[in-house]
Image (tube, rainbow, N blue to C red):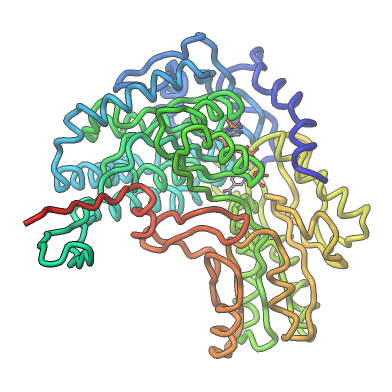
Length: 532
Ligand code: NDP
């Protein structure tokens, strides 16, 4: 199955879900329920009801066309809100606002220390509103509220806190130069690290608030101005974050948030001639479009793309129960909608059956339901498009001869729920083994020769992450060094930190998010030479 043809197939689905307008706002549908009625807190209901606008030049403004599109709750497909369907003209206004702010606003005169304090306030305000953000994220994306509350929201706040510290620490160097063709001449040479300028940021729907934080934090701490386009499926937390940014005192035009579709607003942002850099997270297919669009003015590009990450379990993994739990978490966290999901489980032959049985056992016990139910462990996929995508992969896998130890189908017939799935009897050529499914589906393969293992693990066009489970520390280091992946977790998985760089080898992307490495991508280095 080619992603491109899939995208064409889903166009009609997207169009129908966008334009659905007869459904009641904030309805309570018939999603699979596990007994407890999910409640939406009144301030969220009130916030959802308020008209949604773009944030441009410090003002909340409608799309130039006046058009809106629907934002649905993936647990019941009911309407949550409507947001601006922005186009080229809106992006252009936002870029102009960002350019003006970059060239002449108080932002440029703000000291690094003041900038750092401002970012710290953003982190504090996210924490102050953590319950609200978690609920919004759950409604919009489908993930369990409890997970958003302990993972997405605190990680987003921590990213701003971490980046706040860097505002005062991005330094140039003094460089002793020799200039061989100017004997006897003396110079004082140094470098300045300056903001890249106006940055376009395009983010996906799997961790909407966190991805906004990953993008905005480094851009702002280094003094850039931003136009952010959230994903069409999940624009709500970015709009709420916009309110928080204004409350924290971010000057007008420094952050502009424009909602809309990738093909229109996103493409206009990536191609805009007055954008200096574009940072993108999403599919490898769209990553390629971004690179092409950026070619017009040769803007700088960073990409955080897909993955098909190997998770390797050796027979000397030690605590097998913990390893099995780790392998299950590696794929089922966030419903498998993680670019770094451990979606290829490679298990040493002697313990293969036991590990597969264990991971399948975990899968069967996962409580599926709406994200707002207290005991939900896995919510719906984000959209009908993703439901179709994942179930088509499952059907294709079955047709190709894969065996589903558990799962393999949609769960229920309301909302976008999919059964956590463990597949065996797979071959390298199968699409479920090669392609990023972005759902709760793991393919398990046995291995017996350690010599072949690394080439099997690396046999993917992606290179985002990998896992290794062993008590042999020497072996763990050797294999980690040979894996072509941006992150290798040993005896753990899905460990993220604002200080830890994240990004991909091969077709998983260009550049890194987080850590101090990301700051390179948001700054230009200027060499200054003074003749003495
Ligand atoms: P996309 O790559 O289409 O979406 C990511 C972002 O790019 C969204 O904001 C989207 O806008 C935008 N976009 C789409 N087309 C363009 C374009 N031509 N120019 C500029 N921006 C554009 O991912 P999908 O949502 O379609 O998901 C498809 C697959 O992508 C998933 O199944 C998964 O495999 C992968 N993916 C990977 C992610 C990661 O973290 N690496 C995250 C999300 C998806 P809009 O949503 O408004 O159309």
